[in-house]
Amino acid sequence: MRRVLFQIHRWVGLVAGLYVLIISITGAALVFRIDLQRASHPGLFTATEGTLADPVTIMESVVEAYPDHGLSGVDAPTTTRSTYLAYVTSPAGFKTVLIDPVTARVLGELPQRTAVRALQDLHYDLLSGRTGRIVNGIGALAIIVLAATGITEWWRGAQKWKRKRVWRELHRTIGIWSVAFLLMWAITGVYFAFPGTVRALIGTVSPITNSRTPESTAVAGVAPPSWEQVIASAKEVSRSSHIARVVLPFGARGSWLVMFADRQPTPAYTELESVFVDRYTGAIIATDEQRLSAGDRMTRAIAPLHIGSFGGTPLRVVWFVFGLAPAALALSGAVVWWRR
Image (cartoon, rainbow, N blue to C red; front, side, top):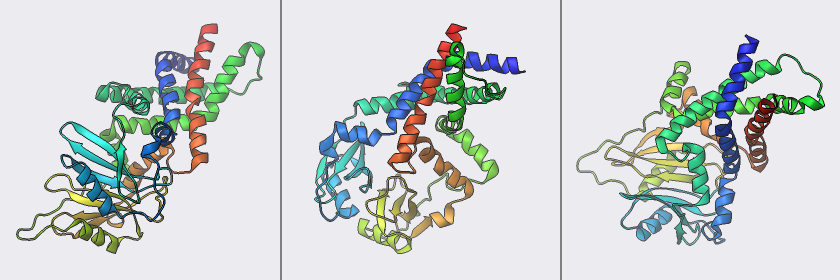
């Protein structure tokens, strides 16, 4: 069995080696995505000092600047991004817009084609859309196999380093020290490729109650609430006082989503409190306290865990360093195979 597992580890590693190398390097780089964007477009991420404008003023400014687009939502400044961010949509696609948080002046929009965007597309979808996302999921499963079979090989016992086996021992050492990270990234990566399947598996442990956004109910003869009224309704039931994100209703049954943080600017690595508001009546439909189950919290933790967005810069550095481990394993494994 040990020999079989070793052969599985070897040949899966050889077949998936290039994939692992690409995913490792691009993933490590994207840990500092916001820093790369700021360096590439400093004018879009430089804010005026002063009192922050309220979200409604920001939304009105965006609508005025993009009258032929639909506004999807706005994000307040965070500890890593000093400007407001908004998304506007049209039949041609969506645009990411940056707004000065004090003057509410639209600073511009992120270009659709940038080096960072290409890096994201390569890491998420292998530059191949949905097909690439599926291949990514299969690759993540391959990494799980590599990690599991690699543990069995290491478990045979530690051996002294020898000059003629330095590459093999380097491969084993990097593998055992990074195996927990490899499994975490692979398992969470499977979720992004096959979310329905993973959610179903999580649902067997704890029901997932927030798979659908609460819907609004139309009331005849009642004028819909203004943006100010929606925000005011959400504030009344929120445990926090700072608005971190506002998502506008989508479709006839959609609802407002107002998300709150306990501090301002919004900590970039924190869980937000959600409040859903009926688009027709302004009534509160649901809050986090009413809706979140253990399964909900598990699914919500997947993305922050994968990208390391639940801690500060030191944690991002850790994610960056260990993010390069798969690349080191792919290269050292290839050298071991070649020398054998």
